[in-house]
Image (cartoon, rainbow, N blue to C red; front, side, top):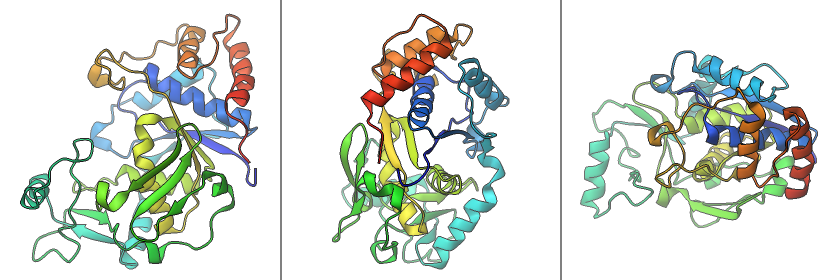
Length: 317
């Protein structure tokens, strides 16, 4: 590897970890250890209305119970809003971000007039209503322009992003990248997402901006997270390009599904992770990752899985 490996696990404290959360935590820890790198924990508490009091402490204790110890003190996003504002100011100064006065109802009405609906995972693809100005309305949120980024992106790739095979199509905003598990991926951000929110109407910074700023500030070289977040990758690469930041490699892990066949979550019955028997919890997470069960100690299991992980995922170069 050209740069020292630095990975991270970044839970949102909307409640305790559940079985699906541990899969992502274990995968990111194993990938870091398999590369002789550092593993960090970042508490993504930027969406304050959804955060549950004391959930961050519970999460950190659950990870400790499973022997997943970070190599540096955890970081809390809620303490870093100044950095996110600096990044937003940079984008605004370069004409890459603009204020938006649209409500959800406004967006739905604009799409309806265009004969469009919820075409992307049931979400609204923003039609660019406020790009040309607010026309007397007060701005509520800030959005990234996805129609003019190509001429603003850095020319030189970052060394440790080489293996990710990241490129941007010349004619439209199509982001191509290679996921270490899922293989070649692409997304036309302008057509499939539209100008996405960087700062919400309630004053909270959006996940996309915060995660990009923090990954760069912490020197993250590899992002290992659940497959449900793969759809965010193109937007994050676009933001990295717009801000002149390094692009990590990405690996998206299998999901634990609930009884309804959807990703396990509190909304579909996920129970808080029971770490009283750490080995049992780890074995269940390992099975989702295609790793064999172990019946010794939790420490012995983790050590064996590091070796198994190296065989499943060849070391990145």
